[in-house]
Length: 143
Image 1 (cartoon, rainbow, N blue to C red):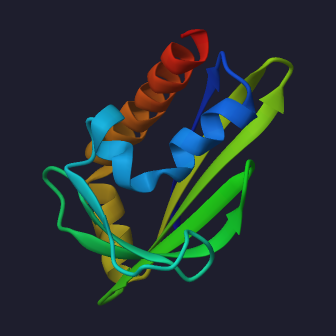
Image 2: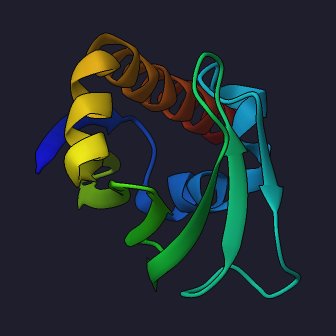
């Protein structure tokens, strides 16, 4: 397994950052690393809900939420031939602020290859997601 992690502090409380993070369909509006995120079912976002994610320079993938803990964390998984990719998004209270933690894990033969080939792009996209969430949460919190 190959994992990438990032962490950033957001000058807004979890209660403010979570609704932005949980509104996955709107990520392309604040994170440059997403071209589109489309819900694949009508169920509320929770374990079992599915989305299709398209990111620039990467193949589109279907993701299924595997764990949904409001105002704290959600995880999702995408599966393909020889690859299982798991993403984890966590918000942790830090006084009046919060810490945003991301983890992206690649398993399988194709996963190991993809993780190495796209290492720079993956880490850049994780950075763009963190910067975008920070900017959006802090701007709307101050407003």
